Amino acid sequence: MTDLPTAVLATPIDIERRAVLDLLPEREFTDHEIGGVVYRETEYEGPQGVWRLVLAMAGRGNERAAAAVEHAVATWRPQILVLCGIAGGLRDARIGDVVAATHVYGYEAGQDTDTGLLPRPASVPTSFPLHQRAQLIADDTAWAAGLDAAPRVFHRPIASGSKVITGNAAASAEHIKRHSSDAQAVDTESFGAMTAADQRRTVDAIVVRGISDLLGDKTKEADKHRQPLAARNAAAFALALIARSKPTQAEIRPLAGGKSNTYIGAVGNGANANIAAMGDRAHGRIRIDYRK
Image 1 (cartoon, one colour):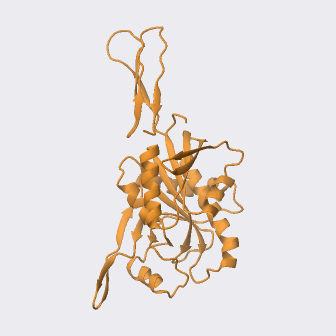
Image 2 (cartoon, rainbow, N blue to C red):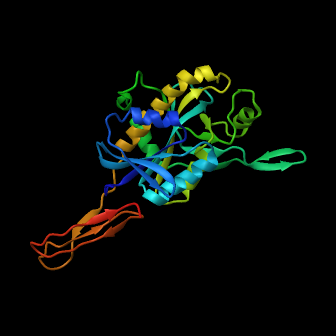
């Protein structure tokens, strides 16, 4: 493993993971099985520096996504985490649009009474710094250079629940329109993933989704063509967001006092270091481990 700052890119299903891998051709990956969970690791260089990029498989559903994010954050101590994949479109969405979520609604929460459901939608924010960076990236189309066309990018909430919604008049669709009306997309993993990340103050996390259906037009045949397109668009934006984020490197500074060239290493949040400090003309090595 490298001693680089870490970015975790989590995808719930295979088609989303393959979209990420297709955009990283001829890349060398190292596979790790840690606590029964498999990760793929590689180096990923962007304008701001070099990342240790870790690909995680989140699994379907909010519960699995929450567990996967919790494990990934505890294992790798990442600086940033992006949940990336496909979603159903709401409002004025079109197939292929990208949504960089500002926050995520858990739209199913509420109190079930004799007279009906009293909705109490929960909400969890995504990282404000990553949200700002996503806005800057979307200002031009450079991030979409590897795509057939530059998709539209929305910076809006995402609604997340346990159901796959396949109709615009479905009860869940009407519920979202009534109680989470500014949501641009709906999925089944984002609320769990962002809730788990939000409890870890050391990681900036965000959701990036590509629109693969508009609820009422979802069919297996349409999915064969639309899901790969939407997954690739989301993966391209997610990778651009990581590439243009600045890795937090270990700070190295001279010790106070004297004329020694001795140095000490200090690392970022959640990191551990074995530090060697030597005198003039001596040789030392600083080993930084962001995993433990």
